[in-house]
Length: 69
Image (cartoon, rainbow, N blue to C red):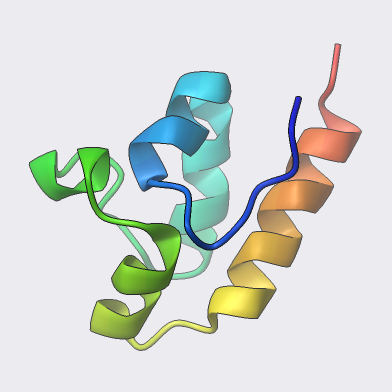
């Protein structure tokens, strides 16, 4: 598992573990199933949703640290 960064697409993150969708949803970003998620970066999505990008990336990395098999 590599570190999640703000320049990764939402789709890249979800492909690593579909359960990570819950982290996006907890931040109010329900776009994980949207076609844009395949090419929109986390940073772009945060900008369009008014979400804190650094907080989301941190939460995603914590999720993957805690859920690595």
